[in-house]
Length: 457
View 1 (cartoon, helix red, strand yellow):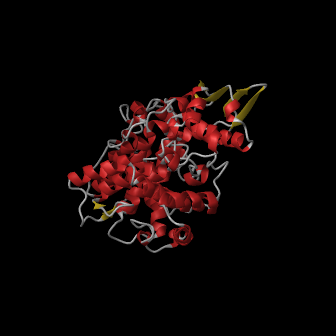
View 2 (cartoon, helix red, strand yellow):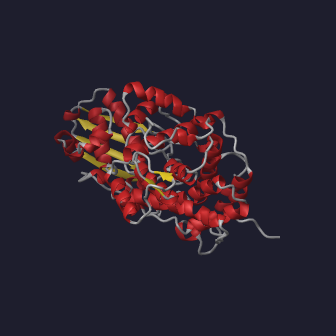
View 3 (cartoon, one colour):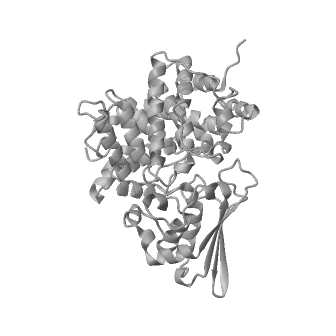
């Protein structure tokens, strides 16, 4: 009797199951599509997104008769190219959501793939939900099998595991059977590649674009009968062995969860209140508390920021020199939150890291990393991030277990609406109408009528 591989087990689950998320999870899914739509719209004007479209135009993948929309523009492209362009735009400002077990920016991988691969035909909210959940299930279970060691070794999980998730979502969309789906996931492992060393450069969102394009084409190849090695999580030279600490027992435990619960119900989604790396957000949440208390920044002698070593390693920049570095500079993000109570896209566009008061605080800031007791946890509430501020006559310490935007400290509906309004650049009278219309997308017969190139359309 042939033993079912990990990819085959995932594939059987996502090909044969009608997913029924909890009411709470359905709320996360509804918000995820709208939130990433806004991130794509604002990201479309970022230099990396503009340059991407120039390259796709030069290569003939953007042309007027193409099937797929590039949001925030008048352009249309082939499905893979549109998915790539939209993913790069959605990730350009690091404002997009993420999930814990896979440590991926999940919606920027799944939503562009789903929308692009379904262009030219109706896409009901129910079908879109099923496709997203197929991708989420894949990313979460593979993430549980190989992370956080995979990420800690320097792999950009959104680009590696994310490519497999995109393939799973499109395979579900194309109604591939279990064997075809397993081949799609196997093929996607060969397109999933990205390095954390690229953080702080245009390459970071571009890696995500490559992954999404790779996931789309992997599913299309599998639909045409192309095969792949379905033992990629067990093989001696497969993905788990080469890109993590190969642990067959751990892979088996992660796969054993399939069918027991729905991953979205277990882990939910983390939404970002600020356009910067999520590993700055616990410290920023603490700085928000200090700002609300009215602490006098000018009187501060020194600031110590303490966080896990893996998180600190993703944030190598102290005084940023450009926008890409600013998104991964913990001292800058912390200083802006303490001084203003926020960090906005306008702050970044205005190069606020050049402000004298910001520079002064950055100069007083030191970052200290620690080895976590439970490195498998992204956020261990027993080992929170810590801010220690010295000022004349005293010291202030703040511990932060979870960041604003996490399931433990969720953003309100009003905060999500405000974020969407700013990202979509909508005036007050229009935003309420468009927001209310988008809220009903899970029940819509064709969500392409709601998620249009421009939200006013």
